[in-house]
Length: 588
Image (cartoon, rainbow, N blue to C red; front, side):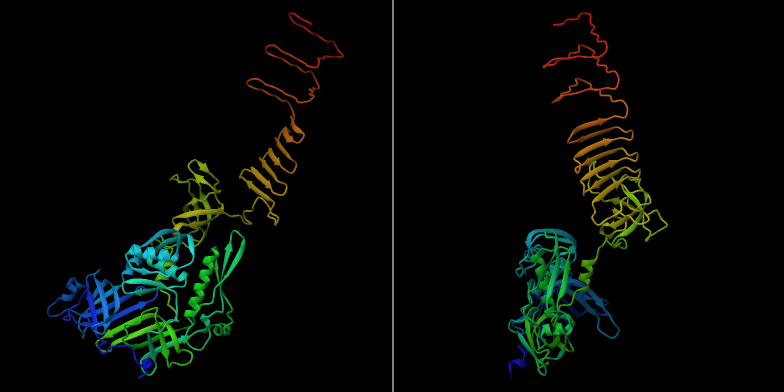
């Protein structure tokens, strides 16, 4: 008989063995059914059903026994008695009793791969200058799980694991590189999808294929994938194209033809900011996922323990669109006392784990309150924090318009011990409010808002030359970037003007007094008196000629000696009477 119409299964293939702690479970315990599920990117699990319990005895001996206590190590093997295949290895996580009228009582034991320990605790971590493959290896090493990690190319300067489990983070990083997370006995492996390997088994309709469901969906295909990301350094959008995957699904339909039928020339991924290498890897991963989804479905055969996720199986006799090599992405073994052992092989795309996606997307405030997503409009009601935490009370009109609102911290341009920017909104001002960890009690004012009802103190323009700060009383700081002028003005029009356009500095008050510094020197103008007082010596040094003029009398007085000296001569003239008095007058 042609090998394609048979399976590599020994005659005694129906033999199932359950081991706990390395030792087989005694045959005296009747095994009713076994279910083993091993799917890429999911934690493998097994469910065992044993007959246990007696109504007459009023007891459940197997349940009472420590054999299947949570944490016990369980192995499920099947196949030839001398060389069985390991279908599952993991830990008991749960057991329960099932009693139904008309059927024997059962002990149900649920087991999961040891990686389940990585899925129970959320935490955060930062990885510096590491590749994803190294991060994945470290996560498994920390959990005591063997890992064969495929190489990755992108080295991250910093990679943050935020409030998620190690398992969720591991799968996410593998997916970002277009890889599958596979279970291999007690260990794990990451691998890129590859349907070019030799088939480990052939399933032929009419011989070895018992059930079959498959579909080809043109909507899943695209002719190209590109990532669009913003480059802050270039101030431009970078577009990175994916390389076409090296594999496609079975059958005679080409993925590019399927995409063309739906007018899908390219799929665009958008990310706020990614290094080019990571953006390219993301596009490659998405393209590989699309090709994996070209043909998907399941095939059932009699029990076959040799096939694992990541292996290749050849389908035959199922038509031109579906015959050929397929990549196995999931295996389910079912055994019971009626049907015997059946194996279901999943091929094509890997279904998303909705629970994992929900965990990744959940922004929780420890589930104590319903989360407050996004931003809220607020109206300031109070600036005096009774707890001295420098918070501002904000009413949230769309949450509770009748209350005074919540106390919110204020984000500032600089803040520290006895320093920083202290500009508080006025009562009645409109502000925008965010929430830390989406907790509605942890509000933060992110900024203040102008509107037609609360107009800005400056009319906007496209040239945007002018910037201004105006306080409630009208104190103004005005910047003109066109003329390069900084003006500080009080409500009484007292001003200090730094003018680079005129090359001057001007200080003037409301009384008409001013001091001007420019290229001609310093000009001091006083509307009335000018008084100059010093605490100690006063020196006036004039580099060239000097002149003092007054419209009326000029008095020069000294508390001690007064000395007038001219190195080039001294002249005193007057058209009126000249007087020179002293207790003693010496001339020459």
